[in-house]
Amino acid sequence: MMVQKLFLKFVIFGIANANLVFGADPCFDVGPDPVTGGYAICLQQDSCITEPVAENACPSYPSDYSCCYHHVFPGREHRGAWIASVTNIDWPTSPTSSVAAQQQQLTFLINQIADAGLNAVYFQVRPAGDALYQSDIEPWSIYLTGEPQGTVPSPMWDPLEYVINLCKPLNIQVHAWINPYRARLTPTSGGLAPNHMAIQYPQCAYPFSTYLWMDPGCEVVQNRTYSVALDLVTRYDLDGLHMDDYFYPYPVTGWVFPDQNTYNEYLQSGGVLGLDDWRRDNVNRLIQRMNDGIHEVKPWVIFSVSPFGIYRAGHPDGMPSPPIVGFDQYSEIYCDAKLWLKEGWIDILQPQLYWRIAPPAQSYPFLLDWWVAEGQNPKLRHVCPGNYLSRVDIDGWPLWEIRDQIDITREPANRKRGSWGNVQFSAKMFRDDFGGSVGFFGNFIYPLPALQPVYPWLSNSTFSKVETMQPIILKSKERSSITVNVTITKDIITSGIVHKLAIYKHATEGQWTLYKVIPGEDIPHPIQLVTNGKYAATFVNRLGQESRKTFFKFP
Image (cartoon, rainbow, N blue to C red; front, top):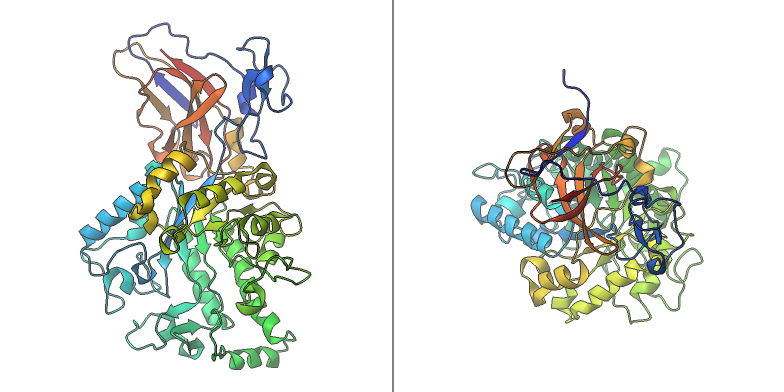
């Protein structure tokens, strides 16, 4: 029986008496800072921008050093991009491409995203009641394999599993993105596969303008979306499950959503809500149910929703008008995202703040300030606004507009209220490197890697075990290059207690950078350290919480 022991083996060949530990320095275990997400470091007192956060915490440093937070320490940040498959916006570029070509395109796209410094992708796997993954519930998507719907890839492959395997070694989270109720981008059901929800539940499938749309008030349709989500969470090693803003369809002049029969059934069963409140309740109950169900299956999987960015402008419960004006998600598509935040039914809210900083009517900083205010976000769930990166192409926005929006998201006043990152729409901007976006992001926005923010409300006694752990550094006398070996039991990894190994490198006086992040399953294998210097290693669990740090240096 394998002993349940964690240790990290540092192999320095040819150096018999190297003193590996240069400081116990408990300062490094203080944090994370609620503003930056960084941990404390030992700095000369004159360089500290905060008061000392721990006493006698820098024993290996000179006496004029103190333990404090500092802006140069690598913080935490959620850096995402939506990969849209509907109408082949981002990937695959064509449903008639060969499997080999689609795989090559996907590998290239993920590598571009990694080069841009991002650490999360939202991969659209259910654009319209279909599947870009192996499903026993829904048919293969026409956006992957073309007509007729349900055509199996040849040779067989699973794009979602492929993306997960691509992203793990790159420190990129994978969130499966589903659309809950859109059935088709044409208003007929002809040609749909027999297991498509519009064919199985025709009484709940309505032509609406240029769409075929499922009725969110139909219990069988709600159950279908829920079943699809839990199937994904159960079978795949996902970091998150994501839904976009399409619940009830956006209004179209001359069209009325035809759910009167469903509503009448609700009234006849004793319901008392008006039509609008009933529609909102249908959406709210799905959000709450998804949150509960996902976390029951896998407590570490992040549930997120990206609603329209404006909420009830001019209403006492909404955004002030003036200055904010515009479409109201609450009354038009029946989304009460403010309620989801207040109740804590989501882990990340990604309001689509698709406007520039300057316009007073829909100003990015004004909108963000409202979403992270205490009145909207009392439970401090993460708010990671969506940015319309494609407007660099569509409307000629300069790339620095997006950079400035991200800088606003990072402002301390916003960070401490839950603003922990951004998500870009859409990924084709990185795929095509439009305007040099890959280099711009990698050099001027995300030049250093970052761990994800922590999710303390999801933690429990099992996950918290990581905080009492510490990698143990050993050495070897054999001659070879430097490697780091870590041996841990498989169940510790699969349980999420140890999900990754983070290695920090001391760069300059008072500055640490995140040097390398190793996936859990690769921790037992040799890990190359290619430069001399001071390092620190730490275990990271599925919720971003870290173990105690172990310091070492080479040579």
